[in-house]
Amino acid sequence: MPTIINTYNNSQYSKIRFYLETFDHNQLKEHLVNHECDIIFSSNDDLPNGQDLVFNKLLTSHFVCVCQVQDPLTTKKMLSLEDLKNRNLIMIDEDWCSKEPIKLQRKVSQHFNYQNITYVGSILVNFLMIKAGIGVSILPDFVYDSTDPGLTTMPFDYDRFLEYGIVYNYNYLSQPEKRFIKWLELYKEFFRNSE
Image 1 (cartoon, rainbow, N blue to C red):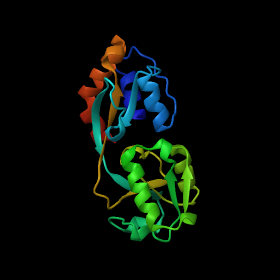
Image 2 (spheres, rainbow, N blue to C red):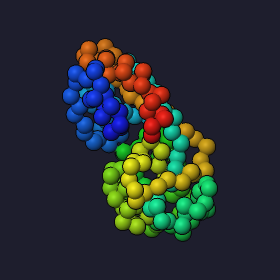
Image 3 (cartoon, rainbow, N blue to C red):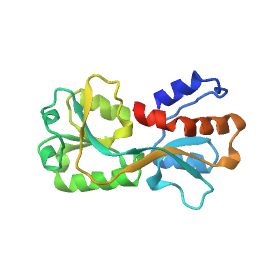
């Protein structure tokens, strides 16, 4: 997301101000439905029902294991549940997740002792705990900050994917917001390649 905002703000089309807030997944959907926000970045697996919402896919995401750069797990080509058996796991609280990550977290928790699992209420806290050596995490690859020199990702053996993009109600958008969406459509291939 920082790449998207930075590139757009430096483009000739930039006429809007970004105001970013962090909400759990359920609050975010509620804000969109109640017209308390205009555009959200989200996955397509848990959109509000019965609403006049549009989903524009920006990229397809797979699940990865996020760990410290020097973690012994980085010597493997692909990680499985068995590789994480004796590790501390950091998971995102279910209010902050869409359906597919919740399914994966529940599957993982069935295989582990709950004493080895810590739940957190934000991605930022998740990454701080990984950096502190408290554990590793399984997340969609689009949430990983590839500019962080202390963290890396390893492919995780899970056959489900997420489509990630923007969600909005076109009828309630201002002209600058519509231009932003059109710009995203034009540049989404660039963002897929730069992430």
